[in-house]
Amino acid sequence: MILVDDAMMEGARATIPVAGEEVAVLAPSYVDYFMMKVISARPSGIRDLASLVLERGLLSSLSERIRQILPYPEVFKSKLEVNIIPVVKRRAFIDSWRGVFGTTKYAEDDRRRIIETLETLLEELQR
Image 1 (cartoon, rainbow, N blue to C red):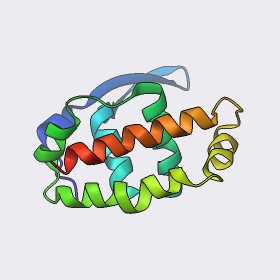
Image 2 (cartoon, rainbow, N blue to C red):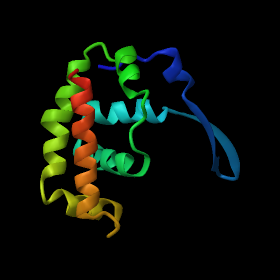
Image 3 (cartoon, rainbow, N blue to C red):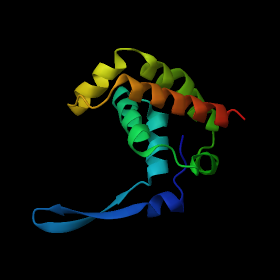
């Protein structure tokens, strides 16, 4: 569903401490990570997406990147419309979201902002 290109392979390089040594790891860029979460549309990924949108928003480069690495961009749109937005709209979502992250931080206003952001993204993709 996603083409792995040179930009994705270059990704963001980071080092993490493991057993007292620094280990280099390759992590996807924010945009690529976001797209992978949407395409998978697993329940845990939907909660991750909600947190990503709330904390980091959406990057303007998302639409361009979708065209670059998604051979079937309609799948991305479908996942948003059928699998992700309806789950976030459920009232029980907020409890699930809080429970997974062990916080009371997330509120109804946050959920509404995420829904608005994802619906705006969906509208942009349908143009």
